Length: 275
Image (cartoon, rainbow, N blue to C red):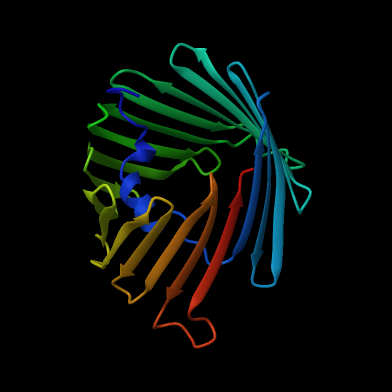
């Protein structure tokens, strides 16, 4: 990526990933197979309480085109066609679901040496229009995003932020909820094996504050342990082990002291296989 800025959605992503990524309190199974011809196959199953959901997806790559087709347990077929370098530094993606004839969407991304622009438009009579942009470099970027609902003729999204990225730390400051919420996050790599992160949120309308802190520790080259604590008393932990190349087993747990006895604590297990 060089000195190019990341898309606006990546501002604060490093801290968010440490605090939330891979935490799961259900039972999840994923099998992924990728052939040398560019074909990919993925089967996913998720058991939440007493309900089981699953989907099967196939992915095909050919030169600069990627086609992803997925069908779920409700017989909904989701298709996404991505064309890279449709113009210089530009890629476009067309997605839709069958039988939902109003689900079509067109996304276009343009990456310049000092700017990253993403746009999206719904392919229906009253589309949702979204636009985000970030300028700067890979180390420092400033950007914003807006969403306009043509059905109600109103802005449904208006956010802005600034991100600072270095090899050993990343900081972000975001103004979200159409200017009603301030978010600040920071992640620091203490050493190659240990990282810590924190996120603080302040709501301007109600003057409410909340914060979350977390850590990640590499016990060995194949095992990672993460912890997370919030101001509302919730505590969570995660243990992820790579028991064979690219195959992971992840155990998650969360305790909420304010939940009823029947609801706490929560446990989750995820198994991802890649032969």
